[in-house]
Length: 353
Image 1 (cartoon, helix red, strand yellow):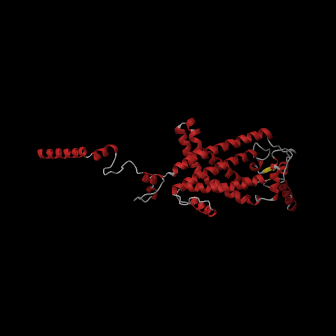
Image 2: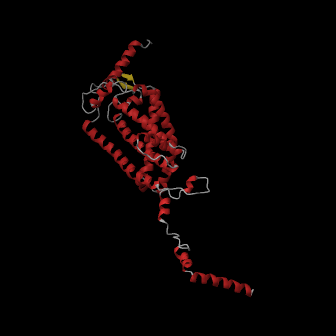
């Protein structure tokens, strides 16, 4: 027993003596330095730069992303999302609302100058209205839930508190993900139903030169079923809707696509020099930023569309409510379309009851 105690005591004594006699060992335990004249926790500049710029090392894990210690591009993504995207997106939304208010104060509600005829003409069938409201209704909810993700913690969180805000945000996430497919369906239906009416023609240039007739009373530029303004909205919605749908799918099913790397490779053919060796995380960051930018752009445009189709113009909302519009309204805003419908009716008269 005595020998064991003596042996233990001697071992402790030798270890302490080693620490005292070797300053590098004792210092290592205090400052984190490693014996042998290495830098230890004082990182080598080249090594730190290599890690900080997101370079991958070696790993035994199946997930290759685990070899990257620091994904530094995340700082850039956060700075862009919380900086220019949030700032200019918010200014754009507030700006279009302000402009429409000023326009309303200047022009007021655009009336049917010849008065309502009391006779209607079918403008949109049931299938047209279904496609419109499917796309429009889902887009409104997608916009609200998306805006909550971008601005909610600054606007709603201080008002509602963390528990209520968390519940709303989680519910909004599911609404956003699932209603996205309803929006895509509405987008496809609208394209199939209306693309033939939205091919640009020379008449559209006349409509644009007259500013659509909305700035001055008594001006009624020629237009078919869709005027130049509606055609622009149609194509922006189709292209923007397709783009936001693709980026949305990439966000819902992460690390499955290389949409931006492939797009950058195509653009490099004209000498842009864009990066193509994007990591999976970088792809998602590009998707998220692009999704936000395009969505905010569509929101700004759709706010103007909602205004002119409701409080901004008398009789316009009827086109998507009942499908029937007043004949005088149609003659003032879509005169060539009314002529086409009248000629078609003469050629194919309805059978007498």
